[in-house]
Image (cartoon, rainbow, N blue to C red; front, side):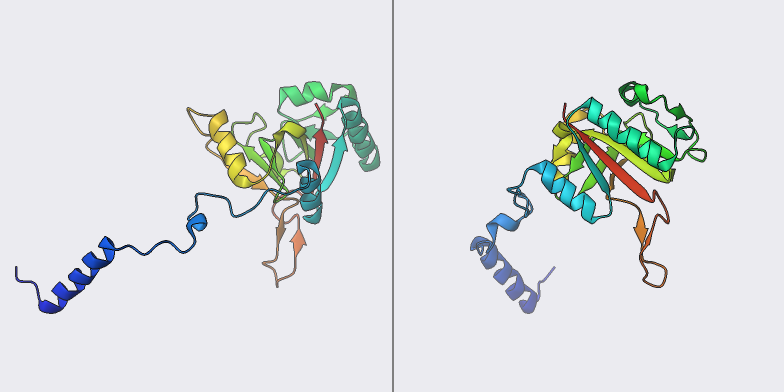
Length: 211
């Protein structure tokens, strides 16, 4: 097939350009490195600041006793002593067993849900969770109050680091659901007015525990 002179000229210029490539002007911005630099603050402080800015409620606990005291105070203030809560993670049930909570498997009956997490993302103040957790997909979404118990060694700086750790944690099979929760649910779809708790928990607490 005969190639037109105009097309031949274009192809010639392309070949010349490929033989003399122009250097990339910003070699560090090709997606291989994070554009966010680690914060000089401790990750606990950074997470607390960002999570609180998103209307989340944060409590640092030096150990199990402080965690139990924080939960006990919350239960007393909210009047939850005889109220049912959802907690499907056996390890967490054992952890808070002195509180003698009343459990249910129904999110419709529960005043609150207690879960762990995969990681806490300090830069965005987000809770990183997955379907591999025994709490399942619904506990952190359909309860009016979400109580997340996490440990200091679960803190990561950014989402990229959190996802990488999940890949390392589940090398053979990634969880079918990986999700981020950044404070209570919010929407501004209704006349551009911010409404909290319209399609998820109205309140989210993170109890960060030192092991």
